[in-house]
Amino acid sequence: MQKVIEVNDLYKLYRVGDEAVRALNGVSFQIYKGEFCAIVGTSGSGKSTLLNMLAGLEKPTKGEVVISGRHIEKMNEEQLVKFRREHVGFIFQSFHLIGTLDAVENVALPLSFRGVKRSVRMKKADQMLDLVKLGKHKKHLPNQMSGGQQQRVGVARALVMEPDIIFADEPTGNLDSHTSKEVMHLMQTVVREQKRTLVMVTHDLQLASYADRIFHIIDGKIVKVEEKQREKEREI
Ligand SMILES: Nc1ncnc2c1ncn2[C@@H]1O[C@H](COP(=O)(O)OP(=O)(O)OP(=O)(O)O)[C@@H](O)[C@H]1O
Picture 1 (cartoon, helix red, strand yellow):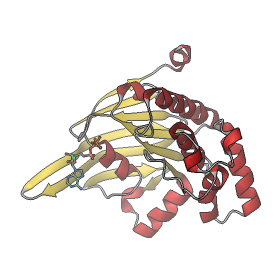
Picture 2 (picture 1 turned 135 degrees about the horizontal axis):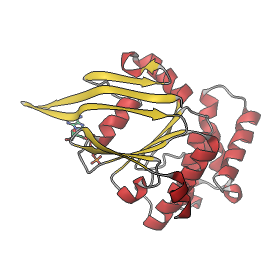
Picture 3 (picture 1 turned 120 degrees about the vertical axis):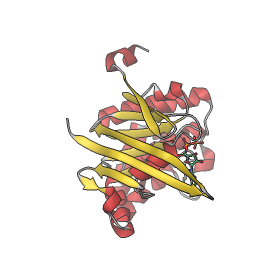
């Protein structure tokens, strides 16, 4: 199995006045290509801090983050921007769609930063929207779509770049429970079909159960890793 993420003895300390907060307190794990992993923990457990370190949005106090063989913690800002553009996709809680662009244009947008020409961009975006079952909503603006549909556009936009890894931070945080399950199911299926690697952060154990592996984090430490059997999942 190909290792996509390797985290070695990761620490993040924040100083607040005289106190030091150990947001990450010695975390080590590996994630392989094609895996859907969930990082689950209560508020303040260190989930967002960990995700920020993995995406190179913040520097660790100590330790290593190796993604696709590259040491993220050693990169400067310019290298990180390039790295994220080429290798990483993001799915956000609040969708972050551009209100004046329709669904296809929103999905195609990240490709323009890579210099892909318009006809190719639009074709790829079109295919991605079919994949997330939004074939009938391609010309809809974000405010003409439901929350679940908007998040499916968000999923398509992350996938269109064919990233090595997709990071999702509470991707269904703004959706009702039924729609959340639909979006989770879609992410699970699409990630599998496309053999992408997805790392999702959530406080919700039920949503985490869609993942192949669940990392439980408490007080900045991974205290348990649960592995799911894919066959069982399909029956549910
Ligand atoms: N910039 C910061 N400065 C000081 N302390 C911070 C900072 N960011 C996070 N922390 C602290 O680090 C710990 C972990 O925070 P983090 O945001 O990673 O938790 P979380 O699990 O993502 O929580 P939530 O689910 O509420 O977003 C908390 O105690 C938090 O107060």
